[in-house]
Amino acid sequence: MTAKPVVLIPRKLAPAVLERANATYDVIVNEDDHVFSREELIAACQNVDAVLPCHSEHFSADVIQALPARLKIIANHSVGVDHVDLTAAKARGIVVTNTPDVLSDATAEIAILCMLGAARRGSEGDRMVRDGRWNFWSPAFMVGRQVTGRRFGVVGMGRVGQVTAERARGFGMEIHYHNRTRLTAEQEKGAIFHESLESLLAVSDVLSLHCPTTPDTIGIINERTLAMLPERAILVNTARGALVDEAALVQALKSGQLFAAGLDVFRTEPGGNPELSVLDNVFMLPHIGSATFETRDAMGFRALDNLDAFFGGSTPLDRLV
Ligand code: DGY
Image (cartoon, rainbow, N blue to C red; front, side, top):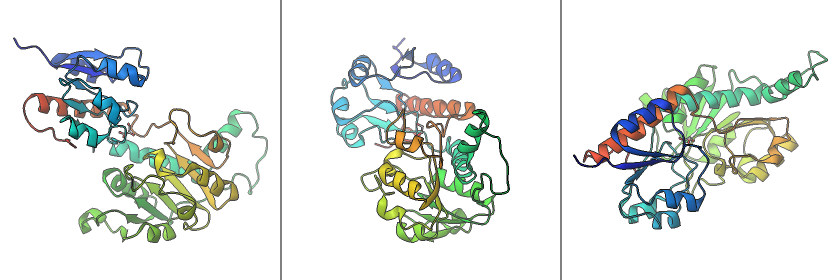
């Protein structure tokens, strides 16, 4: 009998996923679920054929350099792969895969929660009731912005962007988007395409970010671009914190130029940004876009499908390099 491939799973995955992984592979799990330091990650990878990491494991160029020759595939349990240096992996001949599609519904739900939480002052109201400070009501009390009938701007109309747009359409919102390439009429479903980001910003009452982090998109939401949004617009970010210049966002929220922001992702994770945390007009969550029982299973299974294809001698469905 040939030995099973050895797979490192650096975080605690859903029970059904671990069960399936154990049935096929010789699995090493980081039982206490702490985030490996760079050194721990390198050490843990030394005697394995594959690794199945989350976005919390950073495979920078120097970490990839330090991987053993036997490690042939990084099968990510995430759609975003900004934590992996794809160029370095390709140079080492290491296959990298991700888990697209399966988290689109869950992430779209969180984007809508962020939009509504920001527009209707969700955090502020929740804290007021819990803290025992709700001792007043008047027609002028806790008034927010209604999203129904407003314009919803999507930056990055990939799978998550399209599902989120579909949900926003359910609120009677008019959908606008900016994407590298225009979608087909069937995919657009009436959404209005903007060739430039600037043109999209000018019409977006709610701007929702769904693009990957690349050298071109890091900091695309900054002082200049925030100033292009309609007055009292709402920013939603469920993609990656690096897309936003948080100092500029704090200023726009403090000055009232932006009505509010709904954020599931931050430049510093875990932890977030203390300057954003003190603002009442920010609704925030701890990077839980894909955190549903159903989606965690589906992400794990998709990552395992990619591993199975690789070790079975075929090209994984979600191969990136
Ligand atoms: C993703 O899949 O990219 C999510 O952000 C969770 O890691």
